[in-house]
Structure formats: C-alpha cells, structure tokens
Length: 261
Ligand code: UDP
Image (cartoon, rainbow, N blue to C red; front, side, top):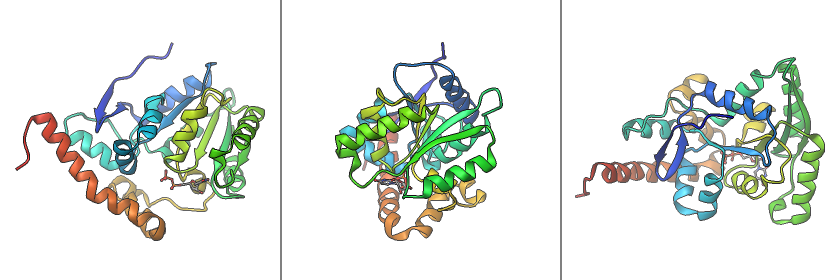
C-alpha cells in the first residue's frame, strides 16, 4: 500500500507536497505494482494555472491525476508567499531524468515516448540508451495533427503502447493536449505511469535545449524558452506575466480576508 501524501490547495489546484526524491520513489513503487489503470502525473506551471481557471476539461484532467507536482518556479514561490509551502520544484523534465536514474539492472525501466515531431522520438531513444543502460525505449510515436479527435488513431496508439508494454509513458504533446488525452484514455493505457512533460522528448533528443542551470535555479527558465521560440511562446508568457500576479493577489486577499481598494 502506498502512503497518501499531504496536498496544498493553490489557485484551486491540489498540489502534492513532495520533493523530487519522494516523487521518484512514488513512481518507482507504481512501476512495480499492477493497477487497473495508468497513474498519470501532471506538472503545473503558470500557463497551467491560468488554463485551470478557464477550462473545465483541464480541471477534470487535473482532478483525476495520481500526482500533481509543481513544475514552475513561480508556482513554488507563490506557495511560499501564501504560506502553503511546497518543498521544492519538481519540473517534469527533471523528473523524467531522475526516474531514469533510478533504473537498475534488477529493476530496469521500459519506456514509451509519445509526441514530438517525426524522428525526434528515435533520436531521444538513442540518447537515452547511450546514457542509461537500464532504460529501454520499447517504442516511440509522433502522432499526426488532430489524432486526438480520431477514434481510429486513438485505438491504434493504445494498441502500440500495449504492444510495447512500457512501465513509463512519456507524453510530450504540450498542454492541454497531453493532459486531456491521458485523462480520457488512462483506463486503457497499458503502462504503469504516464508523465505529462511537454517538450521533454525534444530535450532528450537535443532538438531543443533547456536553460542553463543557473537560469533554472533562479526561476528564469521561461526567459530562455521565450528567447529560443519567441513566435510560439511570447504570447503565452506575456499572458502569464500579466495574469498570474493578479491571481496571487486575489488568493492572498481571499485567504487573509482583505478587500481590494
Ligand atoms: N506536440 C505534439 N503533437 C501535437 C502538439 C505538440 O507532439 O499535436 C509536441 C511538440 O512537438 C513539442 C511538445 O508537444 O515536442 C510541446 O512542447 P511544449 O514546450 O509546448 O510543452 P508545454 O510547455 O506546452 O507543456
């Protein structure tokens, strides 16, 4: 029996108060037990927090997740400011690497990579095999545009995953697509754990590069991402920069009973 964890509620989202190490331990325990459906993990950042306020389908996907861990540094800062302290950032891309680190000769991990552009999954698989000798990528697939609305494709993808029999499904479809897809299909996904981790497959393939460590640690990872993909990401981060502080103030007022002047 796996112990339940303590959660905090932030902007309506229940977030697990877990460190990276505890999260990895939880995932490893799941990879070793049978379960009727796949446990999925979502990793809130500022963009997710805003989407959560606006979209009922995204909220439902979050509510059925087995774990919710904070990907974004601003989410961890807000937790501290609001007195509901999260122990640390558990970024999805780091979590994937730390989980791979936990594989061993006695407990190897089988992994399926779903998402990213054609060819990227295979490059990521080659890099994974070079770096982690106990992690075996048993399948990769880059689904075509609009696949999530096509039942034939959804069936086909579920069959491919079942055939590859992974412990871990790495879902790199971007938000909210990856969260909505796994919420809808997790009862039929034949994997122990699914990680909704955005551009992680691109990072593993070295197709995209993560921010330098000092930027990750000082909460500036977003600036690096905007600088590398300005056309796609500027709007998203601009919206976050405008709306997230207002949300923090609203929650502060709600919590401490202060009224706006
Ligand atoms: N992607 C995909 N299929 C889609 C839409 C996106 O495979 O229909 C991939 C895209 O190639 C990229 C990832 O999803 O690898 C999106 O990464 P992003 O950084 O946007 O993730 P987010 O930050 O939104 O979670």
